[in-house]
Structures are given as structure tokens and as C-alpha cells.
Length: 418
Image 1 (tube, rainbow, N blue to C red):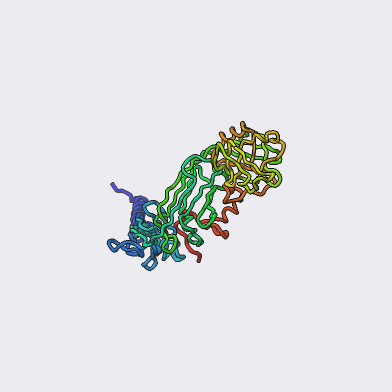
Image 2: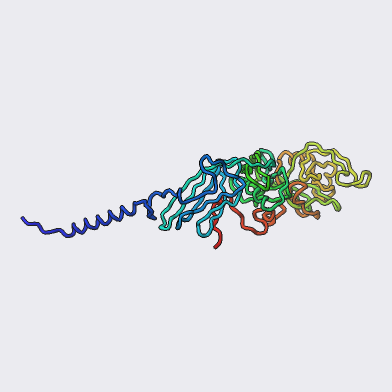
């Protein structure tokens, strides 16, 4: 019995062989851009750090990575220390060289992962670990954060007091990048240099009610300047309470307290009379004192003058260091709600002052509107931070001053312009 040939089957087999050959080529790893595993780029990439037992890297010098082979280019670099801190850097336009743009930490262990690409587009990889030596400098820069760990109102800024003054803009940028504020829920916020040794951090708006704010310094082991290195500093954790805002309308002679957006209580008050007008603007509760002895001499009133006073005051909630309070003023009850007769404080009945005292905490907001007084000082007399708009606040940052682009903490690779 004869059989007719089956050309369609032969063609199918031929196609299958071609497909298998193509598949074998696609799965190869020898310099092919479709390689499933990156090749070892050890001999194609060089570092400027000691290898093996050669010693430890000098933290004073930037980390530099170069592509040595013709046609080889660097595509990505990730440099991390054991604490999880990234090293920011720049990649040259041709992809042949990457260098760090911020100081390495002293006494740290680093892991560097470099991704490459050869002239055929095949991916390569090299991983290097190294240790940095200890700084020879004796000067250390440490940070003291405020307030201490605890619960505060939505208006309390975070403060950072440096152990040494920092004037140089580049050094300020190093310091500012290392001061970390992590809020949950997250908020937009930033540092503002009050002076050479003091920074304040606040959100664009008040802290969210019931947020958790963790503050720390990553300066330890980081070179700040010539013979100046960051030291260890203790972090703090703030818990934010209810959103409490007390608004005093000086022209209406009333204080209204809002909690989480709802009006809780309206209180008749008296504020500063002509010549002693209460400061306008946003202030923050600094503390509470059950008893304070108030004297006119403390605000510049001469003893024996017609304006002189020396009074025992109860339930005093402080809002400025110079002596402005919300407090009990039983002697002016007849004017409360109708006239302004105080020397700058917000006065109310003893009963109302006790209620206010019991319902606010450090960090709560006290805002005065419609007074003829000056606006609350931004710094130096309490926390007038919120009287700067967000644009003005960001101009006090070493990272954004002069309308520079905000540098992201997570940035690791920045190609330079061609």
C-alpha cells in the first residue's frame, strides 16, 4: 500500500526547529540584550574605595564609580549604609561616571549596587561592600529636639537646637537633609532656619488631629564641614491631640473655642486697651500656670504710675514668653463682653478661666483677630510660626531658599544636563 507525502507536516516541523533555534538564542546569556540574568560586571566597573583588606574608605572623599570597558555604561546606582540611609549622587550624561553629591558617614558599612548595560544592551550588575573610617575631627554637631516626647496640640512646631552655629548655606543643607520628620498621616511640611543654631519644623497647615510625629537626626557620622562631623542625637515622638483652636475677637469681646471643627463654648472676654493692645495673629499655648503674680513693671510700666499693678492671677494659660496670658480677671467682669480694659492679656471670669485652663493643652492654637495691636512676632516670643504664609516659610529652608528646587530625600540618581 502506497502513502502520499504529507508536506504540511514537514513544513510544521521545519517551523518548529526554527522556533527552537530562536528560543535558544533568546535564552542565551552571553552578551545578548534579552539575557534572563545580568552578567557579572566586576571587571568592567571600578570604585575609588579600598578592596578586601586594603583598609577603610576615607569619608572625606566622595564615592566615585566608573565604567572601564568601551561601550559599557552605568544605568543605576544604589548606595545604602547599614542604617538604611541612601547616598545621593549624579550620573554623567554619557553614563560613564557616577559620583556621590553628599558626604559619606564615618564609621559606617555601605552596600553599593551598580546596574550596567553593554554596547548590545545586555544588563550587568556589580555589588560592593566597604567600610568607612572614623573621622579625625574632634568637633561634633548634635541636635536637641523639642518638645519632649508627649501629647501636644495641632499648632506645636518641632524645634531643633544645634550644639554649634552653622552659617554656611551648603553646610546648612547637609544638616537640614539629615533632620527627619515622619508624620502619620503624612503632611507637607518643612524646616525653617530661625538663626544659626535653631530650626523650626511645621506643616503647611496645622498637624492633623491624632497624628503621630516621629523626629530624628541622621547626622551621626556625617561630615558637615571642615573638621565638623555629626554626632548622635536623641529623637522624639509627638502624639497630636484634638484640633483645638480658640479664636478671640477683640472687637466683639468674645473668645470661641472650637474642637475638631465644632464650636464648644463662647466666652465673654476683655482684651488690651488703647496703648496696650493685644497682639493679633496666631499664637500657641506654651504652658499653664495655676497661679502667677503679675506686675506692671514686667511689661515696662513704672511702679507708682497710674497704670501700675501687682495682682495675684489664677488659671493662667501662657501664649507669649513676654507675659501674655489667657487668665482669670475677676476685677474686670463688668467689662468682659463689652469693653477692652486689660494691659494686653485676654481676661475672663474665674469660672470661665478654669474651664479654658482645663480644656487646652500645650500646642493648642490661640488666635486673636480684629485687635489694633501688632501681629504676633514670628520667633523669639513664643510660637508665631503660623503667621508666615507657606511661601515665606519655605524661603527659610536651606534646601529651597532662592527658589531652588526641593531636593527629595529619596533621590539617588540625578543625570546631569547635557
